[in-house]
Length: 173
Image (cartoon, rainbow, N blue to C red; front, side, top):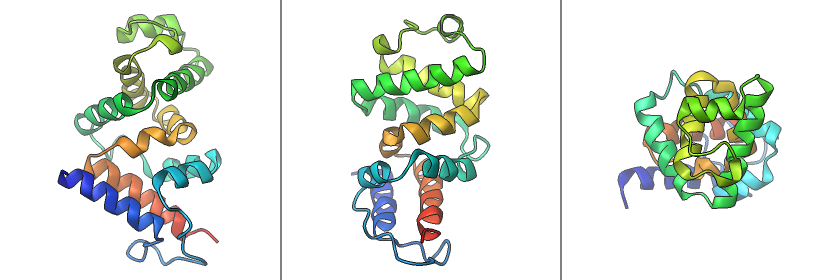
């Protein structure tokens, strides 16, 4: 196991145990009821995750040279049906901004503009485009599709997301 994987697992263990003492003083019950990241992701609402990522996940904090390879690895590891959901979510938000799927296909060099037919590389390109050009859309899709986060292994990325989650968990009542 690499040190990045160990670090990420420790952050998630600490979060599951409510260990947030070094970040914020917890108010109320510790969040010990979260056993794993999956449990955390399933039992928090999209709005709670939206607030969490809105406060802490900013492109200027994580350079693209670190985020892009992490996104590629993470998206390659999620299940194909979850990857389709991620692609649909990106396209939905891009469409709300007036960005057409076919234009994005051409601009980003995607193999298709159909979310259900996209490969991991295509979805990674969508995620990178959102991260650089529409960070609010990137955060929104992470809030809607949190499964990507558990596969991010870079300590900087995991640390920022872990800090955000710890602050949110520590502030719960």
